[in-house]
Picture 1 (spheres, rainbow, N blue to C red):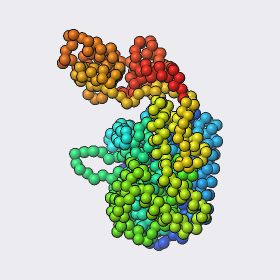
Picture 2: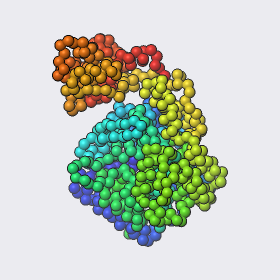
Picture 3: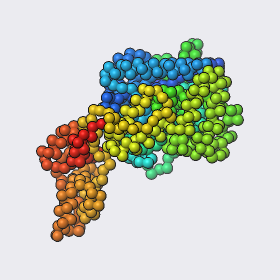
Picture 4: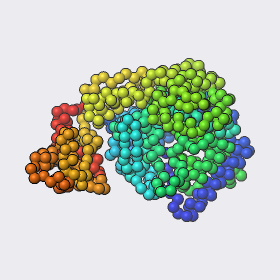
Length: 626
């Protein structure tokens, strides 16, 4: 998530000073390009590994800072939520056994993280979206205490002037409002970096955009969020909506999202990409700039362009242009941000090699991609594969082709050629691109999750199924086999422990509710038809205001003096006992026994988020202990 020593720029003088430095950074970069001060005689790769921290119950942990302190390694840093960390791997020249070296360093650092996490009863998991994240773990309390995260959350909310709204539709549908950017923390990725010669930057960047869809299509690993089946790579829609600053109005305004694929092919140079981003996006964060970039350049030093780097870090292109300085030399690179974390390190390294091979192996006829392909086709392709994965049909260079055929028949040969051109070890090429081929013909991470989650849901409650799924994902990662070799889950009865202990783990979240002004005869009839014994009643603002029970329904239906004009408010119970998601199951049982009631609505603030019934409690008491 970038640098942490930042602030918002509400103060006029600070804003003016930061903007001056931002504009000077642009001028400095222009001068560096003109004077050939950007490195162009070497190609390096780099990567960032985001990962999840989970408890022995396979739920999100909250001790990232304690683990980070225990690890005490500059390769590691915090992420937005207390249950995520990030590893920044060392850049390495693209040649020989570079992918083997990256894999060894990544595996070593993940093992180091695991050893320190185990001391605190925590595990490390690679997952694009952790299946067991619940709405409760997206509250502000779970945000890592960092000035950058606080200020980012504050500024984004100010720009929206409203809560964040998520509306995701796949096989299932998820619609919810949220008061912070924490939904972004659900996303963990394996971010890839490739250094680009300045003169080839625009051609490389546009090619990176064009190939994003088929690459994403075979790398999807994030199909589930809050127990819903959504997109094959739900991260794409979730990340966009969780950081969306755009408001709505009656005016038809073209507004660019901060998380974006873009609106057109890039042109000019990297400078033009940066200028467009400054023009299209408000400046969110600022920092004290100690050394002006133009002055640094005049004295013979290579500037770090701190203002530009900070602003660029708040614009989340799926292919992001980056500037950096290493060993006193400036370079530019492309950061691939759409690849999800996991399912295994081997899968990630295969994704890395495939992307890099395609980038460096670009055929000359695609140097001017705008002559071959409409940008809107590239963008539409990206959305398609995020939704449907490798089952998608793409518009590619004037023809329709499936993701699988495009990868197997056209892109893999290009990747082989590119890696061979960079003199990558032949055995590494065959091993890594072989994984891509097998996965394309076989099973992706998202397909494995959906198939097994559906199977588990036939016999387990939602929370139990998600925990089983997470446990088996962890076990498979420990074995190290790529996802196309993973077997179906079979033995669910001994899958995991300890048992659920909070009501949020067993409550029903798919609620049938009625409005207090609904006609009573209709509401009670529907209860009878659907065999529903407890129905929460909401007022016109959607807040809980009563409860309609089976007893009310039977009494009303039997009444010989019932009034067909009666509404739900006339027959419901207005005194409703509620509990919180964090209430223990045992405490909920005590409350139901004491008050002789058959259900408890569960609220978060003023909002109804679930319900727990006698049936749920009986199942719990009868040993639904996985």
